[in-house]
Length: 293
Image (cartoon, rainbow, N blue to C red):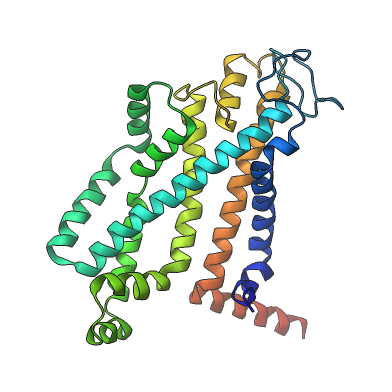
């Protein structure tokens, strides 16, 4: 009974594929200490080894096991990405819903703040902040990414809230004596769950890519672990020029697969919840049945 509302999600091929890929990396992140065979920082093995039975992803030029680094890096990358994605969505939801529901001067002030963050060059702002902080941790990076990337979602939430605020059920809630805060929390937000879920996924993807980019540029504590830091060390030690493909391919593939899983799940949610896409899919199915007949 509890899983019945999720049946359309899991019966959709895109969402099921994306969820399985994401679940695999989530399990890797949670159980990293149990899965990784070695310490990610232990430089006690033969350097520059290609993949072998003992070292599945090979070793670095200092003799560190790349597979163990990949496993432990998945944890930080997933935590930073999802944490920043959820936090930026919450900030955007608060700004967007309040602006769209209250209107007037409140909307004007909040919209000005949103537009201010929208016109700021995101990557340049991140680089300036990171350069000022000097080698921050991945978790600090996640907070910075969240506080600089919430405005896009806020604009979408504001637009949807303005549409919902004109509906009859909102008028009925007002007439019943519900407070504005209660209406926003119990009436408006539940009707935007698919939009919220989609924003979390794309914000998470953006946060993962942003963290990887900052780490690759050396604007993160290089002694911590993440897929971006793995790429930084591979680049700094000319892994590509030396033909050490096993050093930079795993983190790149990891980022790509997690991104693919989030995109697939978001597309599936859109297909399941968007009435227009539902109608188009039904028409296609009818056309196929008619062609077969």
